[in-house]
Image (cartoon, rainbow, N blue to C red; front, side, top):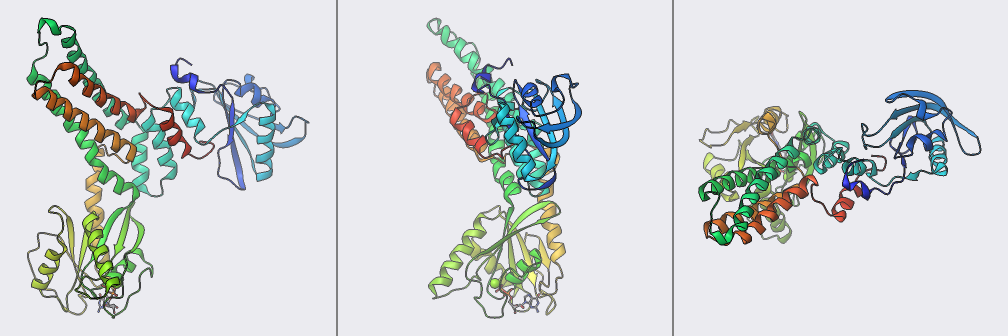
Length: 458
Ligand SMILES: Nc1nc2c(ncn2[C@@H]2O[C@H](COP(=O)(O)OP(=O)(O)O)[C@@H](O)[C@H]2O)c(=O)[nH]1
Ligand SMILES: [Mg+2]
């Protein structure tokens, strides 16, 4: 392999069960490494070296004492055009835990080593088959439990994000090069690049890095579940709505005001998007310390939610009450609020100008719930269409934030005529942080941390 990082691989041929633990119709055991073909052949009745690349052979499995273990298939994929970049065999065997253990034992007796978590993918990275963002996307893809997370992982696996990071790095390398050229000729007091062009380039880089960093709030919500807080005064039907949205008796519903005193939270998927609905304690003045704490939490949840559903009671709330309730929430200026008039089976709500979408509902009878769902999915589906790049990974977000800080320091340095060599230090720092994202620069402990979260066999 021509990657200098290849040295980090210990040279062992590794093996692991790649299918889920337990019994199944079929199990897959993967073998990867320089000696995969020879070691694999020791447990299989055919010589794998003679099997055409990317084809399948049928044969019998035996151990070192020639005990028959199973019969099944061997798929041969020679490096470098394999997932890991090394010679790889995938054995399809019958999925009893006993057979799986015995074939694994036979492979280890033959000289393979049991793979650690994510070791196949780690080798793929070290052999230059994937960059770090793609390797992480593989883990996300395996963990994806709903269509939204699946799509984000697949986009990242396709490499669009890594491409943008690499483009940013290249622009920055060009910039750092010009700065350093200037340094070489410092005595001659020459300014090579004109400062306006430098600044324009920095503004562009800062804009692109900033957009990616800012997309984390959306990306993370799409992956982990978009937080939607249901707030309002007691007895408006908040808990009834939570139950209707989840289609489950999750929260206690009663006509006694102040029933919900803590936040109740649960997730569900609507049209492929994951939402986390948060039912909260009714907002009212209270002397009760427990209820007061519940109200404090409710306001916290409202402030940090992606969407706030303000529940109103068509029977008891006047539009003035309603506006007062909205103001009492004291939400950040650009919050996404939906005004929900509940109990429309009892009364018709008064008209008012909200500047927010309004839904008329009877949560108890299930009317208007679908309309609300439509509204929510429409909002978040348009947000993530057009395949804009969205950052979903905390590690990427932190590196982008650090890169943004370093780029700002470069810009300020240039503006205040700080010596070029000091500015160049900040430029290198920004370059370093961008490189951390794709793994162009990496520390072993970071790699260890990333791959330890993988399944064994991937
Ligand atoms: N008529 C009517 N009653 C409702 C509706 N939604 C909730 N309720 C009733 O209002 C009371 C308070 O509901 P609950 O969900 O506990 O309100 P919360 O305090 O805001 O969580 C209960 O007796 C519910 O059965 C509705 O759409 N129509
Ligand atoms: Mg309640």
